[in-house]
Figure 1: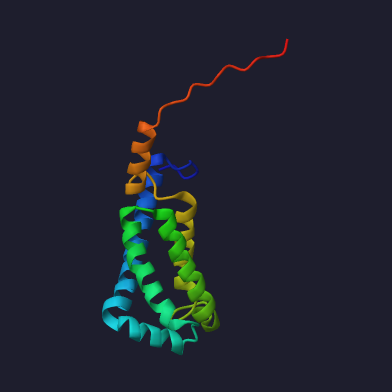
Figure 2: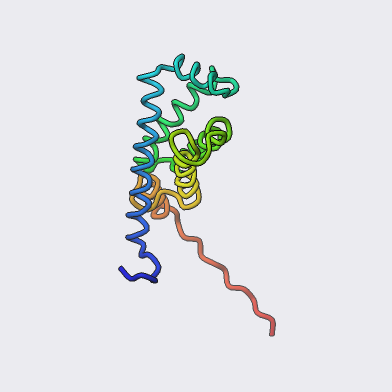
Length: 156
């Protein structure tokens, strides 16, 4: 590895896979905790006590987005869409819950901010080649016929 050289395609794919799997696992754990440990009623009550509006609606939405979105990230399926949904939940969590608690954990913005940054990276870059999205994209590009360009006339 050279210190000042650009990353190779392989290094980029390793990095995107690593961030997808780690961030996906974190979101699966948080979503599973909401769904299977606290239960939706418990999460709605917790959200309400933190001042989250429409807690009864947002609790199941957030739990499912985190759980299913985390699975999608690990598989690399619909990565940009899943990452956008997860980023949206982090923006709401930061603004509604964490910003008043300062920067550092416990309770501060540092952890949800790092998850927000990670999901925005995946929205912007996509999942990389080592993903179901990459496989689908590769298969689609093989099946799309090439259109020949017609020559343009040049002025004399």
